[in-house]
Image 1 (tube, rainbow, N blue to C red):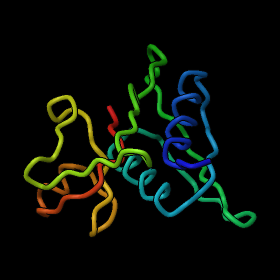
Image 2 (image 1 turned 120 degrees about the vertical axis):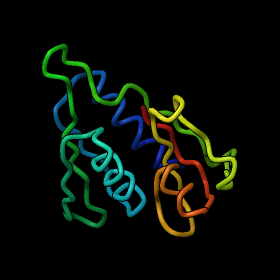
Image 3 (image 1 turned 30 degrees about the vertical axis):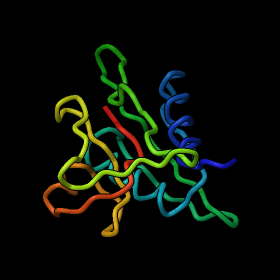
Image 4 (image 1 turned 135 degrees about the horizontal axis):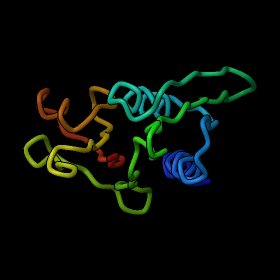
Length: 131
């Protein structure tokens, strides 16, 4: 596997399509930070870090609308990939759905959303869009 972030997003996408309640993904520090951002912004219900084995796993409880069973996450899109990295400065930060979605960035100050990066005047690698 050459792109663990794409694998993480694909596991979430597949679990949402199958309407699973919980999905397990292999853990890494970057995936843990992305999971924390998804929880803070209300895209997932809960998460739990399980430190079993050499790597550990992340258990993510997905969030659905109780009325029509639609997921809180409509789309997960990988932007920067190993073959073509995408970077953005704080002045030309991407806006996802005109501010309704979030872009997750890896910056020198840590992993954060596009709005946080704009307020801290820091740019970085655009990992993915979530809306």
